[in-house]
Length: 294
Image: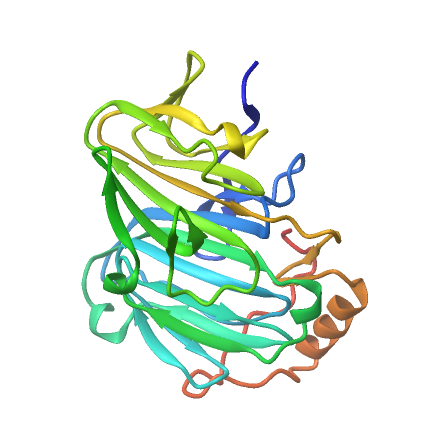
């Protein structure tokens, strides 16, 4: 019997000037552990006249994780942080009761060609922390745990697993693990994962019980304790998941909560422009959409 519960194909989603490959949420699987949203951004090449300009927009009830493979993004938020995100680093922004941020091409790159490629991820907060004060952390690439085991290269982007712990300050038991292999070989993670688990193939492929899977797919495991498969040569995959919450989570646009009333209040506050402004990026904002995209 296959250990794969569900195969989720990447679907095009419009986030403004960009089309991204949306992987979560999915009709048959709204969350994987606390992970509630995952977009594959790019790779896209922008010329000197094209910029990434995601205007100020709000969040509640979640942490955002931005992880770039190529390119650079200038992050600004209503706490006053202004940080350039570069490949391999992790931007971890916890919205809690409410935060506003923007993501733009850095000024020094706006007159040149550039590439944008990475993952945008939302991690829902536990119910008792949904209204916490917002926070922001930037973790440089060299701060993330990396190790080699059986000729596999591991990097722990967030969470705690396999005896390693990331510097990213998460708020529930979870993991996001990068695995790279230069050769075809077996990956045996039996007994090393917990909770719910998804496997995202960035490049290359895997084989499980005679079935081949390639890039732009998430495979959802039926039982993380039985996680073993063959990874193809020159592959990069991400395994992510953790303990699921007992309560349902609702999504409306950029808002996540276990209580629809929290979303209603946030929506009205954003329409009234009652959220804090971003220092240095106060003029523009993304209006609440007439028809929410999620």
